[in-house]
Length: 155
Image (cartoon, rainbow, N blue to C red):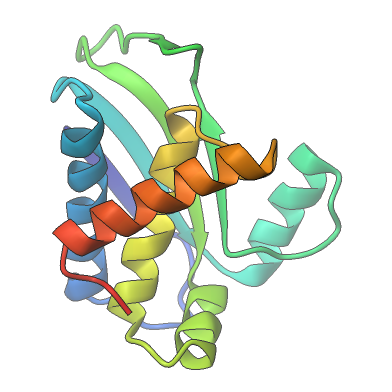
């Protein structure tokens, strides 16, 4: 799986460890869900102001959030990158500012928070949605827990 990570913020440290855990999380979801290794995802690391702008622009919600997912597929069908031949899953945008705040609030490492946000967002790219129903929420939460357990990133 090709994972392109771009750090677009400079207020909070984005170390090799966080970059690595995001990659591992994407690969863990790919393996868990049986997604082709010939796939790709883009990950943008931003601050609260930028994710708030995106949230307002694309979801009409004037607030920052921890992560946004922009899937490029529908009903399991994805476009193919003409340059690489890879299946394009979509884009993940993580507010590192919110990730640091949440890691403090939940009393766990930033590594764990970045891993959780990447797993959560990857599942959204694959069509899972915790906002559609309680049953869908339970399915998504169970998958998140299972993948984080595999990654040894439990709370």
